[in-house]
Amino acid sequence: MNGPLLKVENLTKHYPLGAGFLNKTTPVVRAVENLSFSVEAGETLCIVGESGCGKSTVARLLMRLMDPTGGRVLIDETDIASLKKHALRAFRRRMQMVFQDPFSSLNPRLTAGQIITEPVENFERLSRKQRQALAADLLRKVGMAPEMMHRFPSEMSGGQRQRLGIARALALEPSLIIADEAVSALDVSVQAQILNLLMDLQEQMGIAFVFISHDLGVVEHIGHRVAVMYLGRIVELATREALFATPVHPYTEALIAAAPVPDPTRVRLEAPVEGEVPSPVNPPTGCAFHPRCPLAVERCRIDIPSLTPMSDGRLVACHVRAPAAGVNAQPVVAANSSLAVR
Ligand code: SF4
Image (cartoon, rainbow, N blue to C red; front, top):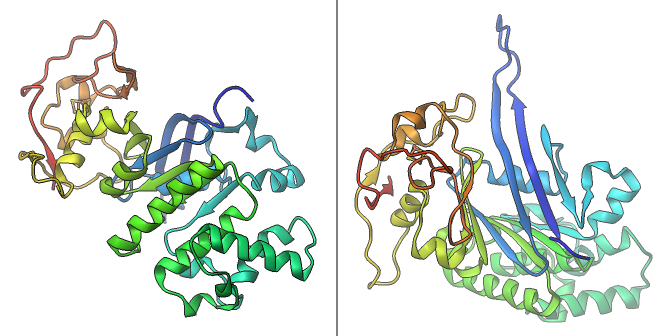
């Protein structure tokens, strides 16, 4: 099959907040606005941003756990919204999810073996011997002893539970795994083991990942490309190398500057960006980052910047750093200024 495995076109999700007493208009949460991106087979696209930026809503939309307000999600050119119940169920074999909190996503009354084989048994009948062989094989794949199939989740450590969650996701041999903050509840050393496991599995099985995280260290470790989200929109999409070496969008620069710096030779940037992420119920006009952006010009308060291709292939939505062709916006401070979110 030619073309990307996953293609997202103008994906939008607005939630009504419920009509208040005497209110004539219902407030709307603009969780995701006009997102477009693609993921190739065997690739890891990371989606990164502060909490409340809409990245977990994107995960649910990709899995069709909720319907979008607008836009499309295509897997191998098939729009998943066009699939009826039976076809959608069959299609879901190809897409699996790994959650942040493995404990609450695993049935505490089932053993590890039952948890792993349950998704397969929704599609085909397995003999006892087949179930045991499948569970043992998948436990081995995620670095656990086959004997663990008789344990319950409550008898496992956090890292073992997350490995079990990955084994369950692998059971249906998916082409794409959506991992939503999949390592953020784990200790740093266990995080590294799980990330390395996912990278090994990708190499062996050619699985693509959409890896959603607020942690830039994790993203730098695992991502091939990175999409930075701010208040429901992608503001920069670049290869991992380009993004971390030379961030272009002022928000990307601020995020990287604010992240812990394990490398003592890397200089931390200083000037802070003040303030909180605005509410998605009442987002700022124009560029949503303008109230916090020291580079803002008048146009930023009026026009929403569109994602514009740069000479190195990355996409950036910024009137100053990536002006659309024919537009000449002058920054109010020097373009090489340094920023950090506080
Ligand atoms: Fe947004 Fe303007 Fe700042 Fe660019 S310069 S990030 S468009 S506020």
